[in-house]
Length: 138
Image 1 (cartoon, rainbow, N blue to C red):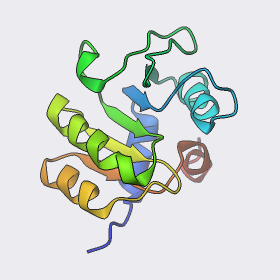
Image 2 (cartoon, rainbow, N blue to C red; image 1 turned 90 degrees about the vertical axis):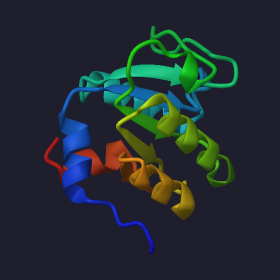
Image 3 (cartoon, helix red, strand yellow; image 1 turned 180 degrees about the vertical axis):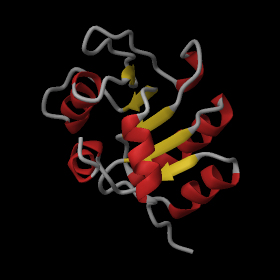
């Protein structure tokens, strides 16, 4: 069955302060992750944790190479990776006990979304917080 985003889940994830691991966040200003993570940090008051292949520090936040390296809990894993690679990130999110996964615009993996739901995670797919926030009155 095709995943359908639940507006109530989107609203809760965007309004309840949380810790977002942003996978694919580097210091490359041409990447959408830079602006979206800044929006999460500055406009929505979320804590962000950058995750990238190099483990870059971004926006003054310590970066990591994998979700497993991040100390403490993760509320949302925000995925800025190719659809063909996002399944592995979702599996890591499940393994570290994240509460939700958010797959960005154009990032679609139905089987990964199903695995996450089956593990009890909230799932948002093919959506962007910057676009969804105004629809929630934020």
